Length: 294
Image (cartoon, rainbow, N blue to C red; front, side, top):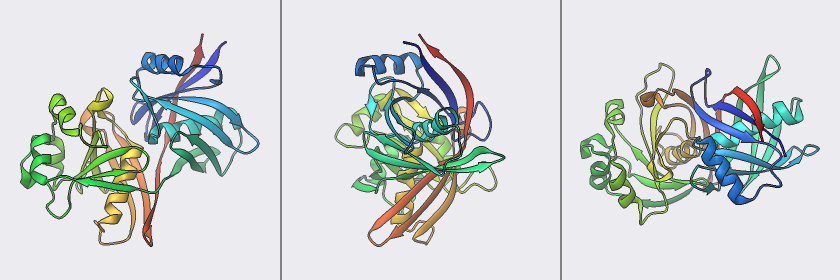
């Protein structure tokens, strides 16, 4: 059977920036092993597989694979797949679609400009906060000085479906210098639920952005990710929980991927509502290519 596929740049303001994604359609007959092999062949950080299309209700069953394993949730695959659904499957303007992922249903909403999707937004599940880590231990892992870490806030595990360590640094220079060594990182994360690390600082390359972030994903076989919606959703929860900006609400632009030549822009919209935190992560999607799997 011939299956259509699409490649896209997600969280990208222009082509060949952001995070690359492959989306495969008509995958109901594929086995888990076949999907895993295709994801390995594509060799992007993630590949998504659309299993079931309920076009009447804008509801779709989707699975996400890295080259190494299936994951329950990831941000840029969710937005990129929603873009393909709107443009290639529904082919009409819709307010929202729902992707049924391993982590649960994730709604994605659309804004449009000149009849084309502009910024897409996904609502993430409630953040869960896990273990904190001593500043000295995290500094050693990142090959930084403890003085490079922001002493006001602890490095902490946060999950909105996929867990990350969120590590507040003081300066953009510290973000640039962060350099975890792979074997040491894998030993460090072994006892924790979170296996990947987001570091951030309130200094940016581009005027108008609010934070610069880097995401180290050695555990997934990719040393650094250029744009990570799931990690930035965790960052949004962290910033709101600790009132980082002095407020219980957050509207922010986060740049990522500059250090590896894939500049990306992620938009965060989060707010504390009683004991819960509602988080939305947004960005643009740019189509790159299409083809057929044979």
